[in-house]
Length: 96
Image (cartoon, rainbow, N blue to C red; front, top):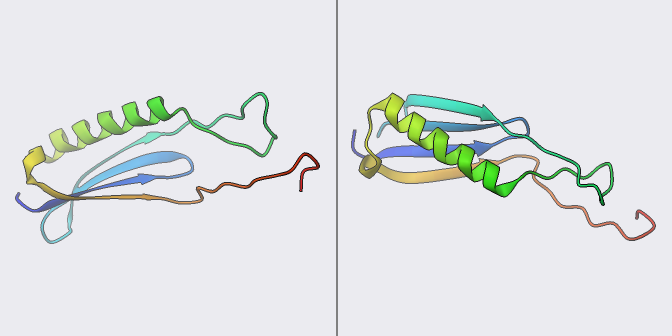
């Protein structure tokens, strides 16, 4: 299917991958959990993820979704990436 679109959504609990056809109708989807952790030297409110782990998960999801869809990578004409609730808050030494 030429002119397919691949989308990645990095959510608060999982990563979703979807391939759509040229009419933006879903062809195949996969998902995997995402793990966050609180760094030892950070506030209890801080959450981080391991970038290499996330990239490995994305690589696997894209490969699995392509296989599931029977679409070849050269048919992907656009990639969309989204994430929700990603944010940064800077605090001073007083917590303000």
